[in-house]
Amino acid sequence: MQASRVRVLGRSLVKPRPSVPRFQPTRRLLSTGTGSEGASAPPPAYKPSIWKRFLQLTGTVTLVTVASGTAFYYFTQKDRTPGHQLPHDPSKKTLVICGSGWGATSLLNSLDTEDYNVIVVSPKNYFLFTPLLPSVAVGTLAPRSIIQPTRYLTRHKKRQVTVIEASATDVDPHTKTVTFADTSEIQGAVSNTTIPYDYLVFAVGAEVQTFNIPGVREHACFMKELEDAEKMQRHFMDCLESAAFPGQTLEEVKRLLHMVVVGGGPTGIELSGELHDFLEEDLRSWYPELSENVRITLVEALPSVLPMFSKQLIDYTESTFKAAKIDILTKTMVKEIKEKSVVLQMPDKSIAEVPCGLVVWAAGNTLRSVTRDLMAKFPKEQTNRRGITVDECLRMAGANDSIFAIGDCTATSYAPTAQVASQEGAYLARVLQQIAKKDELQARLKELATAPEAEVKEERAHLEKRLAKLEKIRPFKYSHQGSLAYIGSDRAIADLPFFNGNLATGGVATYLFWRSAYLTTLFSIRNRTLVATDWIKVKLFGRDVSRE
Image (cartoon, rainbow, N blue to C red; front, side, top):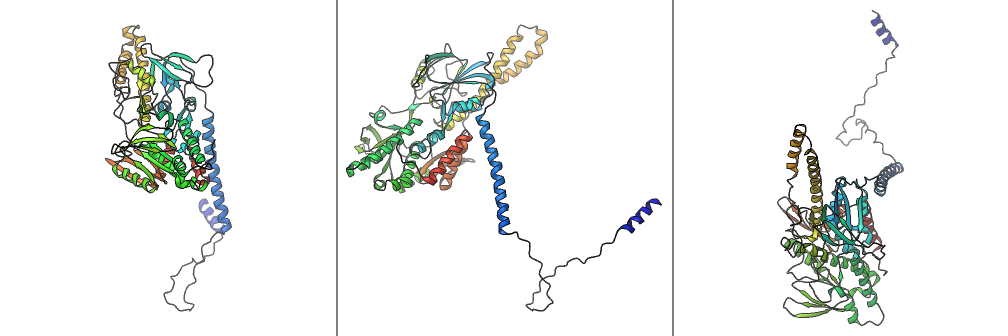
């Protein structure tokens, strides 16, 4: 009874809302009459003013810019301020890494340094991104944009890593020691020392192969190290300025402006393409009187350039070079390089002396002397002249599982490329982690050997079972991710694995893919930012033609 009163009282207090007829839209009359029988059209939708839309867009862009800038700043500062590292642990084994190239850097990047006391010995205290070296040679990229300090990688590891800038001069596998020397211009009181190792990763790379051709080392520029690219850039600008000197004959101008690139691999192809871009995009503006005399010739001893690419892409490269007026001389061998010319053996076996101002040598690798000395200590196992013989787990034959070798200093069934060395380094990091676990179990089993059998029987059986699994190391298997090469004129070629076959593509779209692939392959945000900034700077302002 009381509840019903509440409801009645509630109804009496509520003021009824007047009924409003709902709007019923009517269809537009199909007749064209002008009578009043047609219903009025609904009011137009509200549209904000142009000024309001501009403010909304500005606010959105500002918010996105601030958010992305804050994130970018956070990650860059995180890179610049590495945290605390664990000190060297005397109970851990010593791992010495000789080299700082693709293999060694990939190993450092993936290695868990908690397992070892790691020491890096290399004559360079940085990693060089070699695929972009031709871009440095013509000023497209600044030299420091493609180098990454080794201490950047080691300083961000869990345990301290010792980095020594020195050249390894001798490896003694019997005493397990590495001897190295300080080769810098300024040296301290100690310039030569020896350190012991438990495990050694030999990744010293290779040096330029000259095939004992006279004059190569004296008169040619190489394309192997950073200083080689800087030297070539200086010589190239020297040729231009000398050709512009008053009183030069036309014959001498043509000689000075003839650039010869020896080697039809990716390095030689990309360097020729970069030289052509420099000519078309910059030299025609700043050296109009000389640009028509610049000539580029590519010399290759094999029947075709880029033998690792498909026939379709080789033909595309040759046609692109032909359109760019870059001469390709295949089946042509260099017999001698003189100060002002190069002597060639043509396909018909005739000898021709070609005048030129600059010769760039990009034609192969050979072993370093320290590699030969190490191989000589295992005369029975190390008989391959191409490099160190390793097993399927990258262990040096004859070294009792204490020396691993990766990269260009080895002789394997894979091509001596950066991609192979990088995958070998990542694989070896996993192997060393497995070995560290195995060594730990063996040490624990050694401790249990003195304990009463009844107390440790169960634990020992468990450890032996785990140890048996760790004894099996999976062999290294290379996974080809494709081949890329820049051929100039904003064009690139790519031979990529696609399902069970290959995808061969070339052109401007492939060029954009080439750039994005290299940007993502760079090891740090710093390098990606510097390289991208250099590309934008060249696109806006061109390359610098000043001579240092």
